[in-house]
Image (tube, rainbow, N blue to C red):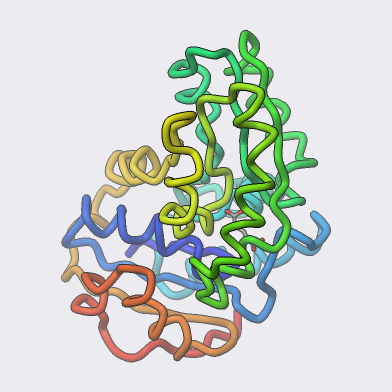
Length: 261
Ligand code: DGL
């Protein structure tokens, strides 16, 4: 069984891709909705949640863990790997490398939460893979909460997104990296804003390929999906159609359940 978690709905974008490449794997998705958003919390708090959820998923029988959250990966993937030495842990990090390779203008912008924006792990990723391009880190506070409340294309919000991105597009950024899994659900708002200027870069496919490499026997199950949330599990399940994830409802092993992780 593969356990996938995020602070809330964002990691569902990763879950959907993993489910499509590993159709027979049994999947557990845990949304830490009692503590969403992670992006405005301090690193020690995020780390304690990640360790607790990781251990909980292993107790449920997961043999591979996917941290479907850039913020949690930045703050705690090393600690989780140390705490669970026998479990393959897949993290999610912004697609700095593919963006740097694809950029023709030599300017890329990475959209993140506030916590990811200050993380040493992100700075390291940039030093390692984007030394020859200019990288702007653009924190986007409040965007994850928009996704949580399913207000995805509210006109006032779309306008605020447009002004937030305008300076980056104006200075020639041609790759906009989605450095938060929640932002994958904002692509219909973002696409028209960046069209003709820049491409959106998402890493969900690369994460899914890594899961295929590490899945081993967990690839072979009944293709069932269990949804868990630390608050309002019914909202997690109800969000699937709004987020365009109707396909996942057919895999549900039962109604979404409250988790005490
Ligand atoms: N989905 C998360 C990420 O990828 C976190 C968003 C949040 O909870 O602030 O960073």
